[in-house]
Length: 305
Length: 283
Image (cartoon, rainbow over all chains, first blue to last red; front, side, top):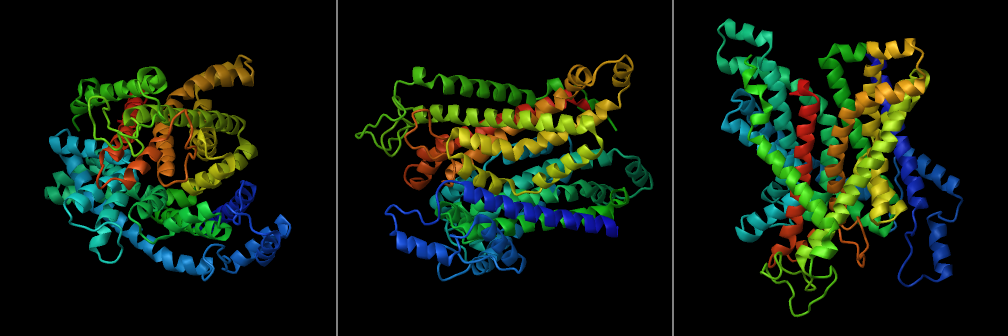
């Protein structure tokens, strides 16, 4: 188990390093720089700015400087927000994004667990058909379209919510639904199909033969068994949430990390782009690491094999 | 348990959805690429006296903020989306399958290293990498297509490799080898046809994924940035135009959004069907 854990951990570190390097190289190769303006800055001013941010140094030196600073946990200054460093921006925005992400996961589980179970239990019934159709649609619905529809219906037409705020729990409802819909759809379909398989297994027949109540058979014996595949998709699901969060933050004007990333890309704010990318990757790698651990715990074949 | 319920998949109401999807994709492809001959309007034809009109008989989807016919713009957008979707999928297919075939067929240490690279690519936040790559390759159709292809090829690599490893174990491969067939011949004649099924399924699912990624990026303003392109404007950009005027003129966002949604849904439906059709065990 120790070998398994350390190997996964090492993999995570390598991924982080690859991302840092790739981002650095891609940004420097891409045309356009952070201080390209409509009106060109006077060369002396530009030279001063570049000297301040060490942009006049050779690229290898800049790279080493960035990596060593990042290892110490310092992500550098932002070129755009002069009063705050990248660390501070992330400290302010990460909790907002995390809050939204956690709400969305809870929403997805709350929707998919009952629906997936019902669909599997009453398979081929109208409940099942509706769930399948809903899942197919939910998977195909882009975040920005669902967000626009929800804002149009519930904020503009019905006036139940105000779009573009992030203060009360009420203001989180529409963004949570937007971000959580696709995972909910995906999980519903997954829980349905794994539970269908499980309900046909021998140990379920045994449980029924013992005379256990139907709810115990399905929920305790069936569902707990069917949840293992759900665990495995938590990694990709986290990735989907992270990507989705940008768009949702953009659509609902939520002051999270994703929105800063979008403006940072247009501004070519190198340190901010790299910082946010690294934090996203770290979250993703962390989630995958946790899933691996849990999975190794649940299924011993993984850690020994 | 009772297998009868699952037995005859061809007689299900889902078939209607499948037929509708195939039909929808066909219509999109044909009208998209034939848009210049179908539409009486030019995609950039400004009509200042007809700004933001709701749908009418002369403008089925209404007009946008500059008085351009929205249906025409959506049709030209279809061409952009289909090109990006198909182009990305084919590019990823080319790179990924070749990579996976080599890795799986050679095996050993090389396979080990090659798959470690794939593992790392798999763990990258793909949307961020896509955005950064698109900065490098340019924010036009080809640039986005290349950037997306470079992000998504790993899926094909994994599947191709897995299939090769499976196929290598089959007795008839061993038979071919025993008869003195060259490696190249075994690969081309015996392994490749065997792995086509799963690859086609992955290909079908890559198209809507690419369309989704491109339109999302265009919507948030980081996608195709080519406002004067006569070849077509991304649906994402059209939706973004409509988004700003959504309160008073919802039709401007409605039609591009519907086009995106139904296209993705249609491709996903076809993909699901193909997967079940080619691999009945998965049902």
